[in-house]
Length: 258
Ligand SMILES: Nc1ncnc2c1ncn2[C@@H]1O[C@H](COP(=O)(O)OP(=O)(O)OP(=O)(O)O)[C@@H](O)[C@H]1O
Image 1 (cartoon, rainbow, N blue to C red):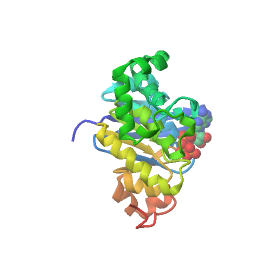
Image 2: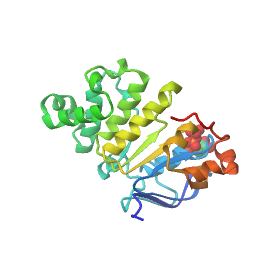
Image 3: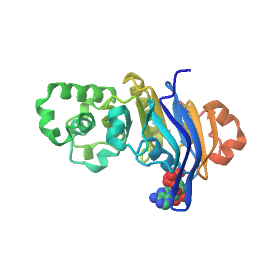
Image 4: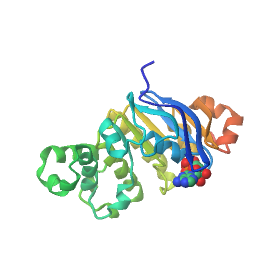
């Protein structure tokens, strides 16, 4: 098997005396979509913050493409090739879809400040923005302000701006939250197909919708009380009633998937 893209070894994280993560060892390999699941307070956000270099582990180590990334921060991580959707559309509702995607592309080049001027003048940047927009089906709304987009389009735009970095690994933190149930599968299908076409090698997914996890993940890491209770291929995870009862509360209804 090829070396892991992303790896933790015996990671622990404390907040004061409170242990939020304990002894977490995991590896993400090319071709995987790894879902992180678990009840509220299980430590999912803490783990994702460690994996994306936002939080330094209290114990153990975390490596991306062989480099230690403990506390490296989002800019360094983006430069190395890991992107995380950051809800930019919520922050800059007045930016157009094109400008929002450009923020992602320029963040990597360290040119964020001159963004708006660059977008008008920079042909390569415009081409990149149009290419990413086309992959996400956002071409028709490219020049509309983000606030005018539908909730589903906003989600796609959020992730599109992360894709503009040409990441090797992308983290999707509840990509379909706030989207109508009927639209969730369409959005996830677009995201995963876009990732494949964009050359993303692995996806990390934090998702409460278990039906989406079963459909789109290849492997499921289940946390409870800050510990890894299960780390299994998706079929094995959902075949184990004890594991699903402990980690996701129920088994999704068969036949609900596309
Ligand atoms: N900054 C902090 N200071 C103190 N405790 C924290 C801090 N951040 C998180 N915690 C605690 O750590 C535990 C894990 O939190 P975390 O947000 O990682 O869980 P989660 O699985 O993402 O939960 P949810 O599904 O509710 O978002 C929780 O008990 C939380 O209260």
